[in-house]
Amino acid sequence: GKHNLWDINSDSEYVEEASAEAATTAATQTRLSRRRQTLKVLQEFGGYLFTGGAATIVDVLVFSILIQSGIWYVFALGISYFLGLSTNFWLSR
Image 1 (cartoon, rainbow, N blue to C red):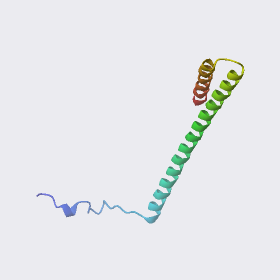
Image 2 (cartoon, rainbow, N blue to C red; image 1 turned 90 degrees about the vertical axis):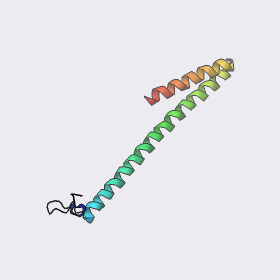
Image 3 (cartoon, rainbow, N blue to C red; image 1 turned 135 degrees about the horizontal axis):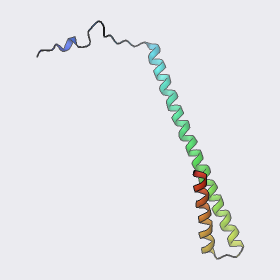
Image 4 (cartoon, helix red, strand yellow; image 1 turned 30 degrees about the horizontal axis):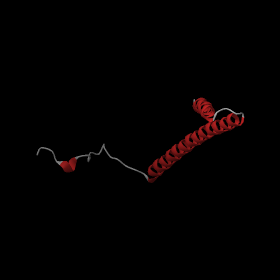
């Protein structure tokens, strides 16, 4: 009742102005920020693929070598799995 809502932010000292250049600059900064985030995600995903791929290759190669050398497949599987897991751990650090 005591306040006139139409007088809010109508002071001559308080004026907000926006220019087209400021809006364009803000939009450009937003686009650049999104591109950086996208590149970061792609870089992390590439690292994930490299780490997982290397660990899988180690696992399969060790398993194949152990099977061909005559080790029982259950032991070969356990050893190759452990080495693949260790490879994944060390590359992820």
